[in-house]
Length: 90
Image 1 (cartoon, one colour):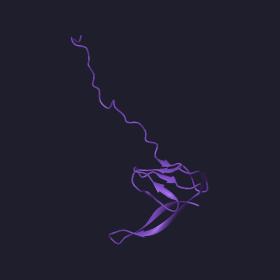
Image 2 (tube, helix red, strand yellow; image 1 turned 90 degrees about the vertical axis):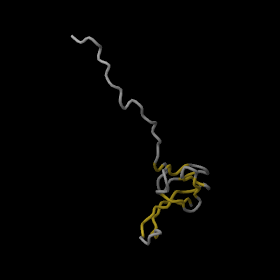
Image 3 (cartoon, one colour; image 1 turned 120 degrees about the vertical axis):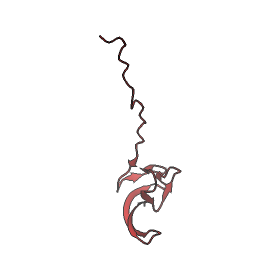
Image 4 (cartoon, one colour; image 1 turned 90 degrees about the horizontal axis):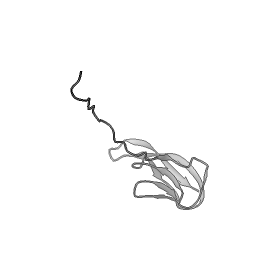
């Protein structure tokens, strides 16, 4: 018989809340002024025409219109060319 009760161990009890990142409005959808289009960490998707960028890199509409996603070839500082996704509101 055990003389002391089993204490157990408490690991991994804390968890952080979900951040709900991602694309909120898809290509061809109508948006109003100030509506969030993309919530992201860093600029994975770049701002195009009529798009504002928040302090946490959130992309939002500056005018009412339709969302359009496109891609463009850009040259990095080291000379490599990459495709970057860009979102516009027209």
